[in-house]
Image (tube, rainbow, N blue to C red; front, side, top):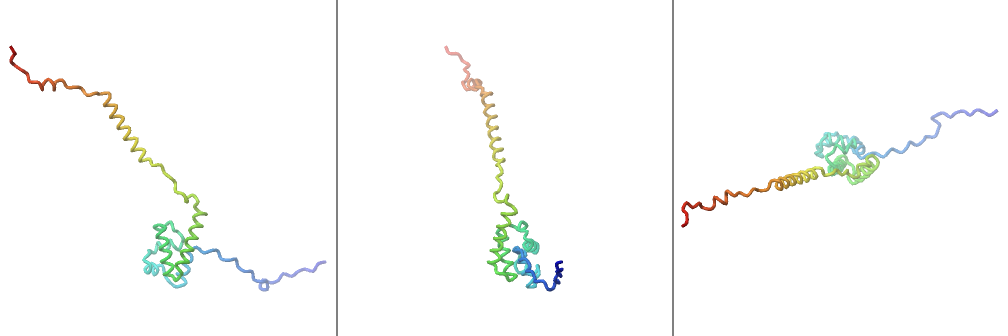
Length: 162
């Protein structure tokens, strides 16, 4: 018979290294640095002149709520400086984060949809139809020559020659 193996207590087991942390988003890095430096959103808003709602969007990585890509990049740079992070490092992380989000989450947004220029076609068709109607009317109703005008232009003579 085999001897029973006694389980080792949890405290004597070798510690398993925790899994490496997931890569933090740029918004989470900015938020973490702000909190570690004891800064409030209102304080950062006063320093950077960026609204609190836009700072919240930035910290939550809701870049679609920001006015545009150029503004988002400027906000990342300004907030990074305000919370004590290296702005170049934050910009590199932002670019990397945006690139990976664009290719994985929204591949259909890479190329904008082309919408046909319906207004231009509509205007061109309208002008063509108008010209067609005018040409048809001109062809079916020729100008009538006024013989009265020619006759009235010749003076009437009351005396007879002779």
